[in-house]
Image 1 (spheres, rainbow, N blue to C red):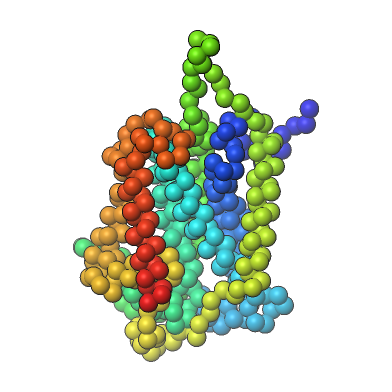
Image 2: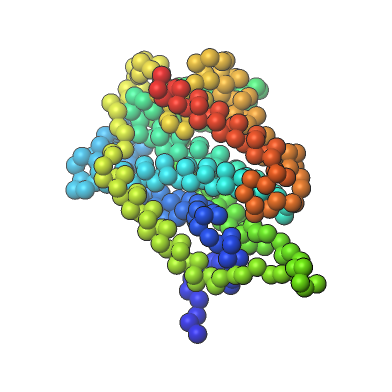
Length: 353
């Protein structure tokens, strides 16, 4: 009998066959871990750290030297950019899958919180990477974002200084965001992902239906299970398909680069129109119509709070675990659908407008 390899040891010996099907999980959790740990962090993140110069004068030029001067250097930032884009999409779709299949119920409520915090930190991690391009688009988004931070009651000024490194955007700002991106956010996201995976095992493995009594037998009927080797093989195929998609995106669509920012021109003169990253376009749409405090702090934090408390308020039952769109979780499903439609609608409105 062949001994299990390292990747097989990350899984329990057997897995419920029904819940191991691709159409149940779509491999989104494993894809998220793969995109962050292997692609964003190791394959592309570490090499970029060696060539990036975190100063206001040289940051944009160092990225252009990689993209335009180094042989095949354009592939590295492209892979890093598209891996980050796909990471946010897979984490977001993973959380939607968890909601619609009732996989956040007891005993997995705490793991739901871990996943939500991971998503929020991943958004901030992507924003910090977006700022490090240091062109006119990102400089305008940085100006708007730090202005929102100043709206925090009581701690706004202190928080602004912590992020920017002084009263104005300068060299210290680039170093602060470089540190946040490479350590302050990357390490917590990595630890949270590891904790999240550990809790999946701790909570009884992937969410699955409980054993049900058979009419012909007084004993509970145990559903069929598959060995972990078969699951690892399926995951390997999914990772290869993801790599093909990532390389296709990187070959045909370059990571965006605008004109280098000039911090000496003033915080708002760097760009005629503030361009938020695609994942914060919905916040930018709100900012055009509401106050910074309401649009940039109250509403996003309110959405995060509603999602965090979802297993304790909208759906406290255990019935319907691992069942897509079960009636027991209807309220939670409706709330998440409304939030999702609102975010997508505002994003498209701002993008098309």
